Image (tube, rainbow, N blue to C red; front, side, top):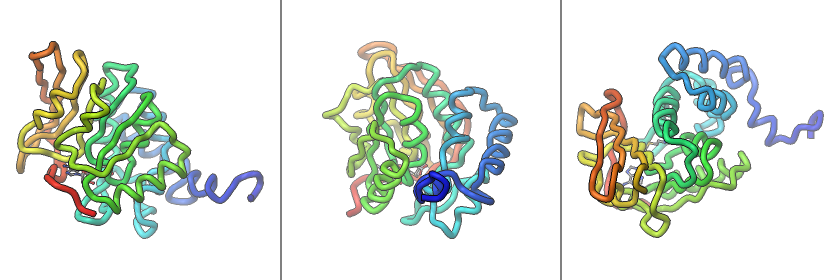
Amino acid sequence: MVGGLSVNDIRLQGIGMTSRRTRERLINRLREQGICDEHVLKIIQETPRHIFIDEALSHRAYEDTALPIGFNQTISQPYIVARMTEVLLSNSPLKRVLEIGTGSGYQTSVLAQLVEQVFSVERIKPLQDKAKERMRQMGLRNVHLQHSDGGMGWPSKAPFDAILVTAAPEQVPEDLLIQLAIGGHIVIPVGQGQQQLKLITRCSETEYDTRIIENVNFVPLLAGTIR
Ligand code: SAH
């Protein structure tokens, strides 16, 4: 303990390039780019993105850019995390949210501070293990992680009020459409090469409405799992 703070508190708080001031600059940039949901901005400002990446890169944690997290994967760009979360929350309050592609767990932790329960699946086990440890450090108890192929969703926990996908399939997986509650939203990047971020709303048992949000660049949604 130092001045009433534990080592974990100090790590979450950050110093120098990971400090409060650096985070404020990021929030200003997100505002300039059109993010206007104050809840989302506040949570992004308070979330220690530096604990979600390797220490060697932590000085770049509050740059508005995707960064490598190993296994050919990346932690999403803060702008994209903010945008997807803002779009998803347009239907709030949300109780049960499914995330496909836990990755570092950064987007998961942002969501977990804004909705009741987050269910997140990841196909690469070592990434999931690290994400689990970070959820523990942050004291987030409303996150449920599973190691599986997210193209199939998480059927035993369905229906979900919203689904957020952080890797791009060529087409929207049918299983995800089925596991969405009526009135719910899916936010998902779709396509090979040029990808589009889509907002799909389930209007009834059989009808879905699709809107295109913007062009994006995600890693591909891949089938199968890695131990
Ligand atoms: N939101 C994450 C983004 C990670 S990149 C973050 O901010 O860190 C996308 C992640 O999706 C990768 O970790 C990748 O392994 C995972 N992924 C790709 N295809 C998947 C699938 N079929 N099921 C589950 N996860 C998948």
